[in-house]
Length: 136
Length: 136
DNA sequence: CCCCTTAATAGTAATTTTTATCAATTTTAA
DNA sequence: TTAAAATTGATAAAAATTACTATTAAGGGG
Image (cartoon, rainbow over all chains, first blue to last red; front, side, top):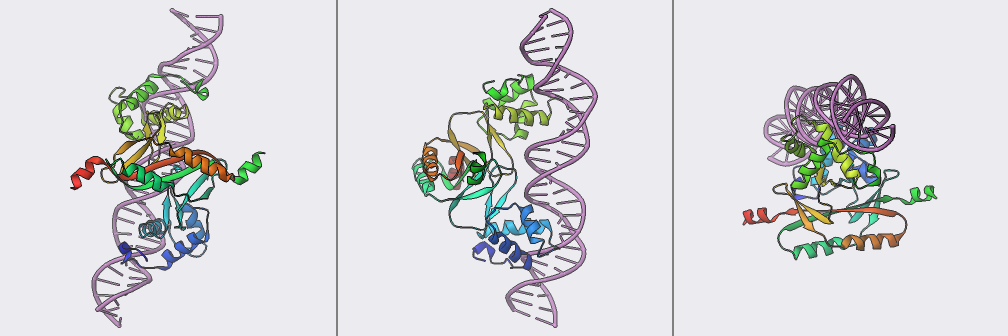
């Protein structure tokens, strides 16, 4: 693993497959959805193991944990800076190219001085290309 | 009520007190926290009623439902545009003055054309003024 | 002011998502 | 090879939220 906090983590079969399967998709699966996929390769893996490994991988900076206000978390193995659009029609979560406006935010608020901002969470709700086409 | 969707809603004692108590605070309480406050005035109110009313008031545009990635929702009766900072030290959620950068986002992404953005969710994680002082 | 329709309520159960527990297993380093 | 420690599967528990239902009450029309 990359991160310092992960010196003592072991790359078990389960952890490796969880990471591999998450890297295969751009669908931003929930823990449960990923569990169903991983189960095809490791039929005996338990849901708790998937949750635990996603938590560890996220703490190590190997994957991203997303909360888009759905009452459940999603996961993303793409670590390049980008945003997310949640389509309110079909529920899909789609990558949105990064525009470095977070920096502007950070600069503006740092200038305000009374609190230290460590991260900016940004996401979008809207209608994806496919659903827009269906509506016309 | 203000909103069209709320023509048939009734301003019950419970709904009025939920709204009044939420308007009294800037602490961005969860449903459960607000339930504890409201209970002092209406000892027989049930948690489900608080949830239901917060949902309805939010659909009517009377209150704001916030999800800051904590695994639970918070509510805010302040409808003026502003952002939120969640202090990772003390857990408090603090209002951050509005800077109209959402518009910049919207314009930039509208120009991309392939999807229709209906809302932008922005919030900050960081350390609040009080916690910064304690750390020095 | 009193009905009457219907939304809303209290109380409770159920659901959903996530975390905790723990004995057994597996990994890794010495 | 062996022993310490991380990890696992299975299961239970926790936490947040939603669903259900008989009863109550809001509020508009007469």
